[in-house]
Image (cartoon, rainbow, N blue to C red):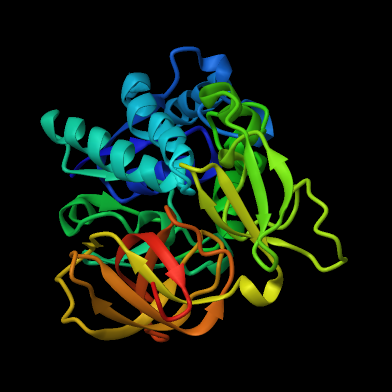
Length: 361
């Protein structure tokens, strides 16, 4: 097959491209330029998509003896990922930019262009497994990225390749070292690539400006502080609230209301939810017969919990959780899994969290 290898400049995508070559595919490497000013994206150990990452990707392509190109997707990335990120925070929601990048950039913009150029598939370094077109968790639970891929459709998965899914990250690094790749010991990227200093609140303040409002304690209804923008908070947040509630009990963000600019905080006993309402779901395969039981993962690094899934009147889902969860933030993705201990949990689909509460989502 003619395969396009998305090469970020990290060890995962380098090994994925190498494995595609080993499998006998006709491989071409591509690096995505996602900013008009490449220096505004992180470099070094803290991020991806920088100039040095492009150089690292090119060196690996040269060692593999495959063609290599850089595609400029900066405008698309700004519109579909960065602007979406800012708009979601302005609306009081907490987006996942990696999920949005996979959905809009890597498996829409890149895949569309790859098909137009005659490629049969796109290979990436994601840690997830494909069983036919069924998306499953990675063999390395600590590195599993199926959560941020749960937004993909069956058609997109049919033209995707995730060769790292069956192996651990240690094995990936060992393969890179065996091949002499300089990226074998390169640290993993972290945080958000388009925020160079890692200061999300500062980035949003520059984008949105000051939008002051009150911080209210749910127990008393009393205003206990002021903030400069609701975008500086996320549901479930404990640190950095900047308030004194009058006692020693820790407070958590319970709700964000962007119109009145109110951030509501409360004690741990008020922070748990057992029901989640979502927007319209997308499915990675056939639409399951609703209602059904499954497991749901509500944040990128959270454990999945048992749940029962029902439909609501607006085309979304109502997800009843077997155990209360904290930090369920509107805007995050609720990714549904079918537990399968023998073959690895299968991703059924996902939907954006709209509401969360106690039996009233």
